[in-house]
Length: 370
Image (cartoon, rainbow, N blue to C red):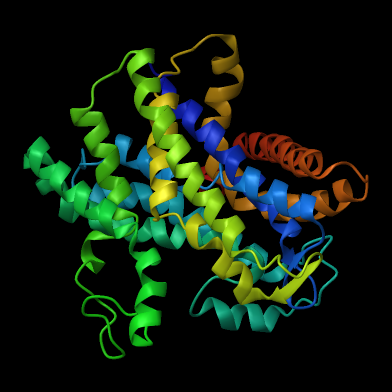
């Protein structure tokens, strides 16, 4: 283990990886049924809202970890892309093909290999929807060399100004319904049928988390626990109020349960769960500041956290193959909703760790698990 290892980032990846799996173990409690959205009971609705609303910062945390380690670039552009290609793109390509040709146990649905390959020409497949993250990450990597000279020269005040503008873009999804009511269109500030690139398009999205990671590393030095909690707790409470309150409010529960509605209803319900929205951004800052205080590097770190952190990308890539049958199996036990969600995620995480650990002993395993 390198003496230069940044301990808290290993803890962050360990925690965020479990958060991602738990998010996906919760999905069957509001996604499914004949129409696409299905919530069986008030308790399922409550626990889905309560738990998932606290987990959405998982993906932004991974982006901030990449920023903390890689941005601005410490090598030339060619070296940077060669390393990312071997560690990210090749495993992604292999697992994408596996999802295209290997049916998932426990789905009970038809499997169309030809259709899968047809879809892959343009995008990820629905049953491997978690791979959207890699497409996004590739986009962030492509911008890193362009933004690195700026990051090396930008002042604290200028970087903070950018982040304030980006933070404003995280509330744009809440303006769209108002625009629809007022104008009949959700388009904002320059967007229209012939132009999807409005005024704030270029300073929005995950690029903000890239800059935020750099800002916190460069300009926000280590805080005491008291100062950390003073900032993190109000940020988390405010963020959670938005994510949970928004999801619950948008849920069409007035007619009672079960709720059965088109898939688009679930998408609408997730408005405040979107990764680049205000509530998730606030929670992400809170989690990052709190996790940065974790400096424990004892036996548990050396033998569990550190190894699993290095395997986290491989676990992420394969986990839907494991979670799908595990989730169906655990739900058959008849446990309470939150126990079912957590148990399915924990079992999936453990199995994923074991499999990726075994693969890591194979020569050239980086091309399979990163």
